[in-house]
Structure formats: C-alpha cells, structure tokens
Image (tube, rainbow, N blue to C red):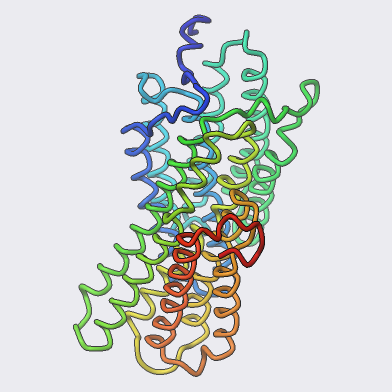
Length: 400
C-alpha cells in the first residue's frame, strides 16, 4: 500500500486561476472513444426502430458516463505519474472491450459489455480510494461514496448481462439510473451522508478542455463516417452536394460550439469560486445532448449520402432534423449556464427546425440536409455578429 506522502503526490496541485494542460496520456485514452462513438452511431443505423433507439440511447449514456467519470478523476489525479498512466491504459483496454461489444450488447455480448463497463467504473473508483490520503477526509470519503454507488450499479450491470431481452434492458436502465442520480444527491451514503459542494473542487480549465475534446471526437467521427461513405459511392452531382452539405454541417457545429462558447465556458469555470457545481451541470450533464446531436447528425449524413434523391422517409427526417435540434438545445442550455441568458439565435434555430419537421416528408433527403445545414449556418452567423457587436452584455433572451 502506498505511503501517506506518495498517496498525496498522486493528486494534481490545483492552483486557483491556473489552467492544467490535458496530458498526452489523456489524449491517448480519448482515442478509444472515437471507436466507441462510431459503434454507437452504427448501432442506431442497423436498428432504427423505437426499441433500437431506446437501446442506442442507453449505450450512448453508458459511453458518455464512463468517459466523463474518467475526466473527473484525471482532473484530480496526475496522469503524468506512472500509476495513474497505468490506470488509464487499463481503462483503455476496458474501453476497447466495451466498444467492440456494442454491436451485440443486447444479444451475444451483453455480459462482455457489462463486465467491461462495471470493471472500468468500479476499478477506477477503487484506485481513487486506494491513493486518496486518509488525512484528507473530504477527498477520501468522496472516493468511498463514489465507489459505493458505482458498486451498487455494477451489480445490476452484471445481472443485466446475464439476463436477456427486455429484462436486460430493464436491469441496465436501473443501473444507469443509479449512476446518473448519484451526483444529484451528492453520493449520499449511510454514516458519511452526502458530500458538500466544496468537496468537488475541480481545475475548471482542464475540465472544459476535456469536454471540448470529446466534442472534437464526436465531430471527427461524423467526418470519418461522411468520408468513408462518400468514398464508396459513385460521385454524381447529388452525392457530391450531399457530401458538401454533410461536411458544412460538421464545420458549422464546430463553429457554434467553439466560437466564443467554449472559450467563455473555460474562462468562467477557471475563475469560478464554485467550479464543482458548474462542472456537474454545464459539463457533465448539458454536454450529453450536444454530443448526442452530433452522433445523430452523423447517422443522417450516412443515410442522405446513400439515398439523396426521392422523398425523405421517417428515418431520414428524424435523423436530419433531430441531430441539429438536439445539438442546438444542448448548446443553448450550456451557454445559458455559463452566460446567464438565452440566445435568440439558438431559439430561432430550434423553432425553425421544429417547423421544418412538418415539411420534411415533402422534401428530398438532399434538400432536407441542405435546409438543416442552412439553419445552422444562420444561427452561427447571427450569434457571431451579435457577440461581435457587443450585445452579449445584455442579459436577456434577445441578446444573440
């Protein structure tokens, strides 16, 4: 067992208003999730039914949760140290097993998925408890609280892996609910009670950069899917236009998230006196619809590229409109969390997409893709011009 001093050195030296860089070990770990995100989007493509959508949602939430928990832990621990690096490498191995199990997670590889997921969650928490110095009572007790909740959820993950069909889905939904509720109740456990928000101090700039990195992962997956699909097609006028629309959509999503928004979030959380609360709301929960929207848009790009002509079916309409809609809902909530006001540009974009849904079945997939991309471009231009003109100082819904 590590000595008291060596345990303490496992943790980052958190200096207020100082940004700790994301390490190369963390970036290497993130690469596994490029594959995981690709697997999730392909799962939805192969099973585009209501039941398949529910399964895909569960798989996405699991992938996001195991990644974001690792981001929290590496915000506290120092990945430059060999034991923490080894932890990340072992989590990478678990992540690869998890990712390769996704296509058949509700069929023959359910137990593999469950074991990989539970091992990553419980193993990481156990490591944290092992290296947390007992003299730092708040940190040590937080580790025990997290380990307790994740261990309880792990039981249901394994039971679900042993079950099949709807029983597996129900047990995994229960496991996921336990994990998602636990931060809201501040990991309350008997004897220790709930943690205080002061116990969750994080290095804000590092957390913001980690979540921005996951957005890059999701956008990169979207571009990879677009390129791989386009490469296999005959390059006609319609497929080229569909390819351009898909690429433009990815770029404008990047612009909407990263132009001012990501920078403002990083600056705010870096200087916040309560970064733990902001990290939990803005970065742990509100990034989920942003990433989900990008993944659903990638599915839409694949569908439109394969069949750009004709009339849009329900699958195409849901993906082409639902992806940008989820993305804008996530970004407006994220930016509201960091700026304190809702942006009119995003509200109008959301309403335009909702209105488009009533006309979607009358448009070809290519036209539908082009219109949704045009709406996103309008939102990006409107926001950029508004912020540039200085209207961001007005704390109202009409500010941008």
